[in-house]
Amino acid sequence: MSREVVVTGFAVHTAFGGRVATRDGVFGGGSAFSPVTRFDTAPFRASAAATDGTPGPGSLRDALNACAADAAAGLPDREDTAVLLGTAGDFTGVTGFWRSGTAAGDTVPVRLADLVAEHLGARGPRLAFTNACVASAVAIMHACRLIASGRLDSAVCAGAYLVEEENFAKFDSGMAFSRDGVVRPFSAGRSGLLLGDGVAAILLEAGDTARRRGARPLAAVIGWGMAADAHHIARPHPQAHGLASAARQALRRAGDPDGRWVDYVNAHGTATKANDPAETTGLRTVFGNRPVPVSSTKGATGHLLEAAGAVEFVITLMAMLDGVLPPTAGYTKPDPACDLDVVPNQARRADVWRALTVNAAFGGANTALLLERR
Image (cartoon, rainbow, N blue to C red):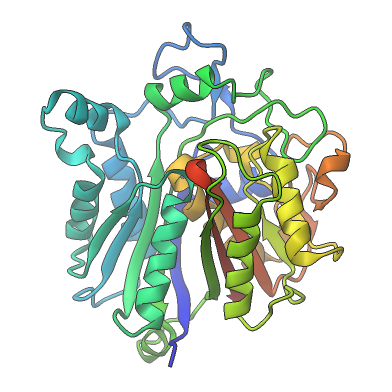
């Protein structure tokens, strides 16, 4: 028998700042983009990202430790708690390790999982997922499987990415960045994405053990799914078969195959010409003509790569707890190819009982997580 998986704690830090600043920035319709100062952008076409200062050595580790400790603050017994991360680590150190064989130390993803677990005093399984923009969503999904099956009682799931030069150069050379420094998901006139700093952590527990220790569940993760397009190394399938399949898996697990009880979708929404119409088609495949409100928060935070799943999970959770749908910052005017009920620029009041958050990654990976308010 599958056990209930509940959320009992969370923490987040973006270019806006911590939990309150992120809520105010994202739900206020703002954007956190500014000129990058942590490395020289002169060789590149783009120069903007959503960054929070200039990180020093160990910044990614420190940010993960702080967020994970905040999320797990109410958990007294961490004997068997797992730590599951979605991150590529400090890219400068990791690429140096693979290229030259020199020690990358604390920057290697699996080592980061060890260090975060040691910082928390968590002695359960430790795993790091590095599968690009679905990495932290997969970390959450794997924890859900372990808890639902009875193999774990609790897990801290986290995602982390800090904007760095190597990925910046790759996205720039691929002509993926917005030409004018504005990200416009699902909008006519969109011209691309921008990167952003993001770290988030979520404490997941079995419902029975959480209630036994007196913890109040904030929400339950009632469905999850993952699927691959196997279409192209970078472009999504035009019909978004993988994304639709992942979403349907999550809905079927919750006993709602048609998604009739879903009140909101936090979309991947990269504001690229290929992603947004494909994602629209995938969501239309799942929900038909039912006008489910949709927003992409990447117009505010930037694209957080490996951290996207965890940060957007937290934003979706905030929407449920506060009864407010986050807006799609930067939206200008409708695109017929993206005919969704997009929440544009200003937050919308709504009673959110169930919400779906979806992510996609290079290589055709797609994930979906379905939350229910408790």
